[in-house]
Image 1 (cartoon, rainbow, N blue to C red):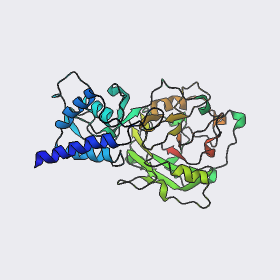
Image 2 (cartoon, rainbow, N blue to C red):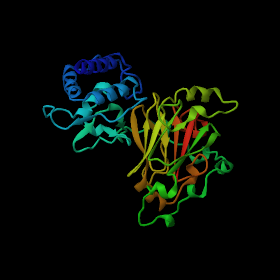
Image 3 (cartoon, rainbow, N blue to C red):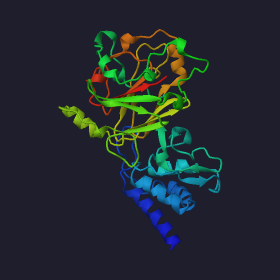
Image 4 (cartoon, rainbow, N blue to C red):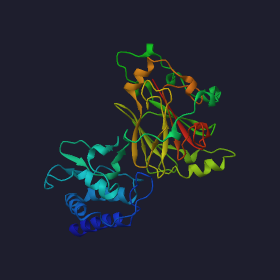
Length: 358
């Protein structure tokens, strides 16, 4: 009976792969489903599935059938025992269920909630515990350059920040940098490491959402977990553009504070666009907006680079609104830039402002 149950789970996994929507290509379009990939991939992946216990097969099936909406727990496979010389098991299952074009593990990043990515006794093979890495080899298109100073129209938004307490003061000078030049402070001392504001065009909707845990999900519909649910935020006379864009947020993003910085993982089916002071080199006077495709992760704020920037002259004239050297701006589905229909982020229908604490 137990063998037949395992066989049924494996068959459901193959059917889910064959009848699913496929992965997400580099252009953001769903790839045509391939029944089982190449014969070599099918054979190698079958070897991995045979090594999984029934509980792990159930967790893997939940993640695959929900396409990551319910990522489930870690799916551990012991190291070795796979014949040797072939691709590691987590790469095989990520290729099988999400990204057939993956070549090596260095193209992936384990998400912050995964506890088995670097274990000594086993490795997590849950493909929805990983993301693709945005590489520097693909520069953003020209339209993502922020507008020059003469096109900027800074907004007086001071009254919109009255809910920020003193611990969330964002003006950090060089004198505030201690011997430990990292913004990654113990959140238990501060209470929260960031606050998230949700905007529709020039209007902030709802209150600031304080984040105390190492990571937070920001989504539209209520999932099986917790996080910042944008679908519950109401607004009178919401624009049609905002309504359309909100329908594209879906599973949204995951923001995580990690030792080297703040990372954003795009869980939705549409791209997100990101701008922060650390996405460019210190000498760059024209920040860029980076496009993050579905399934990809990007380090949206670099702690070490931020410490370098603190000692350099600021250029607030390049900011479309109040200048903040420790904030991240993320728009859903719609980008902005001088050669784009939206010159400033305040023209985007739905966007987030992540206010990092000290």
